[in-house]
Image (tube, rainbow, N blue to C red; front, side, top):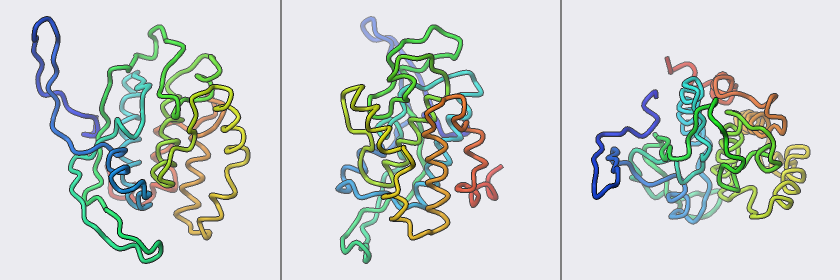
Length: 231
């Protein structure tokens, strides 16, 4: 899995239960965000984390698997040691992860693409529109979740904070309707930020058949600096 999926080390039976031993990892990307007062991750770290996450999901999809529950809680740092640095622009101290290497975990809801699919999958805030509408869904639902996750890393908060399907769809229409001008205004036309939002726009495509695939994501301009250094 390109090293970006949590590794199972062993398993055993205990009083009728199957127990699985996994490698020890650090905090989840959500827990670190929470401990950092929900201050956003730096863009260069989002790029590094996103590259590893999409490589892992590309591996899963090529293996005919769909994760179906991708969220910041299920993406863990290998080591969550951090430094504390002063952000002169924001006039505050922030924690900065020292090593942004991550792994995907929690495959308990994963399914093979040709299996019978439940109509209700994914944690609400990261649920693709076709799932909200009760339509047929496939591997591309994972890509929608990852678009929500990367945007959450960038903003520091959940984009679709709702527990109601109708409200969820209304929020999608409002936010994605064209892609948020209010967010573009924060970029100061920096090329890295513009490339990032172009990627987000392609992951949060309503039509699942037109939504970008993980393998296409890895060729996107936003990941160009990493394409030169990875096999």
